[in-house]
Amino acid sequence: MADASSPADSGRRDATPVKAIDWAQRRIVIDERGLAEALSRFAEVVGTEHVVTELSALRAMGQATVPDSRRPSAIVYPGSADEVAQIIKLAESRSVPLWPCSKGRNWGYGSAAPFLEGTVLLHLERLNRIIEVNEELAYAVIEPGVTYRQLKAFLVQHHPNLWCDCTDGPPDGSVVGNALERGLGVTSYGDHFATLCGLEVVLADGSLIRTGGGEPGHCHTWNTHKWGVGPYLEGLFSQSSLGVVTKAGVWLLRRPQAFVSFTLDLADEANLPRLVDVVRELSLQGVLPQGTHIVNDVVALAVVSQYPRELVGNCTRLPDAVMRELRKHLTIPQWSLGGGLYGTRAQVNAVRAELRRALRGLGRLNVLTDRKVRALLRLETVLESLRSRPLLRQAIAAGFRRLSGKSVELLPVAKRVHSVMQGIPSDYFVRHAYFKSPLEKPEDAHPDRDNCGLIWFAPIAPCTGNHVQVVLNLCKQLFIHHNFDFYAALLMQNSRSMIILLSIFYDKDIPAEANRAQVLYSALTEATQKAGYQQYRTGTMGMAALFSTAPEYGRFVRRLKTALDPMGILAPGKLPH
Ligand code: ADP
Image (cartoon, rainbow, N blue to C red; front, side, top):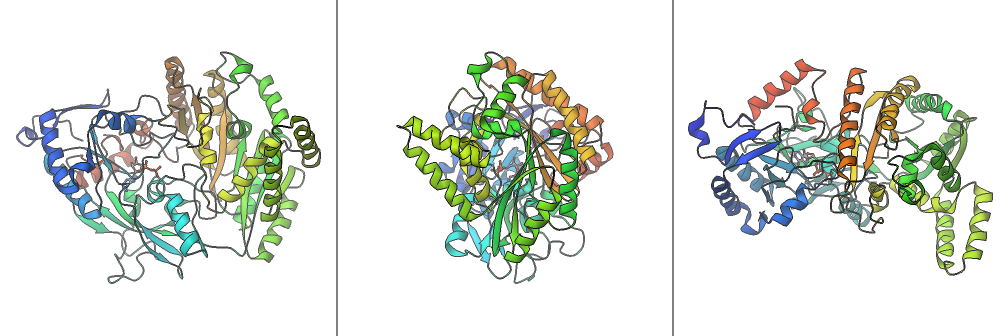
């Protein structure tokens, strides 16, 4: 948004609620009367019950797992694309800044909280219609408030031959919101932005456009031909602030005839670069799908457990000896590979054999079929029923460990990994955000509400063992230096690129620890940018530095922003000002 204190068009701004923007402090100085007037106009469009200004609600929306998040001055909940257009038009005429979000579950990147304190939150969760599912061509047309949980349930009930991809993040996150941020899932359709096809977008002047050819009736291929004709525009609305998406086509997977999931425990950490190279080659040959991932011990520990304060006292990073003990006790490898195989029975069998051959010597490959998962479930139920008979329980657990090499603590993970690979979202993985929280992991995980400390930092590297190791070494020494546990998940974005997803877990109740987490984030940004590695996606903490290594690209994006949103009302701060 332009600096509202500039005299150039002061006549227009007299009527606006924004008196000034303090970019350094990340806040908008609001004229309360002007804001109240604008909100009452919004209420005429959406209904008074859908304009919220209660402090408790604003606080909740301003609370994120990242430190130093900002609070909106109001929340507006439109119920249709037409209402979105009317709100944006009003906002533009009065220069009211809006921060769009679909479900606001952008945990680790800023959640629903705006970049600037005082921005009005344009919350799209009421736009939650599944407009169409095309069974024959395997796609859906949905609104941005549709969640993974909702879409999966709808498909199970009405279109069992179709699967959607999901993330191992929040089941109540928005399918469209995640895809617009270019989030990554876990199946062969894991590159979520790549599965979007045909967007309906409201621009900053309130006009509505459809990318590509537009809706059927005008164009039969709106949701099947991604590129349309002429310049390809959908990218303009991804990781961007150039429009608000109110409808999107999303490609779905045909339910495969056969599916298995697999894991491999890497026997020797020194072989990690080799594993990355093997995985890339298998992917380039079409053997392994995207969505295959490699995670380290801290990831596994955060999933099955919580920070063991009782063992480490005031240490904010697990000492190596403690980590070694935990690994041994829980049978967690330093690195493990996981993924799903999809296809006809013959294809899946052939890939299993090929995988076994290619991974020979690297570690223990474990293939999970539905049958095996059912057996593990039965064992889990038996163990649960034996809580009052600890000796018998221990004997069974020890037997299982002898046979499988695994601790029973890992039983819940296996079945969840197996089902998430089929696009079945689960709250289970979300609970790992409570790793450093003093609270016990709750059933209804909500890391924002529970003040969990979690920041994602996600550089991306060419998918070679060398590059991945360079980034890991660079970042790991910074984690150690700043005294945080090194959480690293390698997510294959495509056969040629590997996302190196790092999480900074910190105790948000301790201000000094939150400060150190911010310092680490800045150090990671600087070090990776200097070494030539971009982030694949960023949140409110990283937005200001987005184009610092690509100034001409930044200037071009700013020209687009000025042309499409001259008043700077959409998501101020999302693109560097
Ligand atoms: P989710 O709930 O899926 O995790 P959010 O709703 O928090 O996602 O959205 C993440 C970010 O994506 C938002 O901060 C916003 O910048 C962008 N975004 C989300 N939905 C839209 C949309 N419909 N139009 C434009 N940008 C959006």
